[in-house]
Each structure stands twice: as structure tokens, then as C-alpha cells.
Image (cartoon, rainbow, N blue to C red; front, side, top):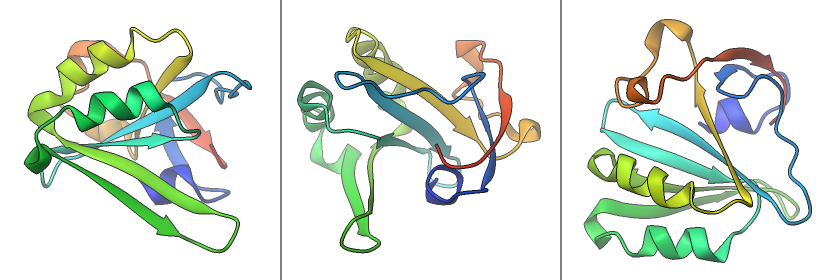
Length: 129
């Protein structure tokens, strides 16, 4: 997820036709599926207290927060959840008008089964999100 989302000139596919610009009040959450472990990652481009509260309501063994500090100015942060909570959590996040959700995948040939009910169209991207 970090290689798709964080690094300039990375190549991936997005459910948004063009990069979602985060406004002063809005938050973009990028979502990726980790098929090998059936977990889903949510990368916040900006902190959102109500969204974090949603993650914290999940059982402790079904969620974790990962942060990698790259330097004193940049860090990559992601909430990860067990895939069985995906639909419920997405439904709750969609209740907030100031949150934009962008689903990302590394290849069109591998659209995760968990994303398929959402009927998403993916667009090719290169560059930092």
C-alpha cells in the first residue's frame, strides 16, 4: 500500500478518475486489500477523529494501527482491519460527507473479490496520491 500511495512515480489503479484533492475540511481515505491475510488497509491523508473512533469500536484482535516514520517531516499511517468488518466499516465511513473514499489496487487483473460488490471502475495512475 505504501509503495502505491506514498512514493512519487508509483503505478497503481484508483477508483477515482483523477486525484482527489483534500480540502481544508475534507479527508481522503485510500483503501487497499491485503489478500494474503484477508485484511484491509485504510490510509488517511489527514486525521479524522470520528473515523478513528469507528476503527476503535472494532474488537482489538480485528484491528491495528501501523505508522512508519520516514523522516522528521513524513510518516505513513494506516489502519488495518479484518476483512469480515469491511462492509460495515465502509458503510459507516460513507455517513460522513467530509470523507472521500478512494479504493486502490496494483493491477486491473487482480480486483479483490471484497471490492467487486461495490461495482467500482478503476483508472490508471502514476504519481503521488
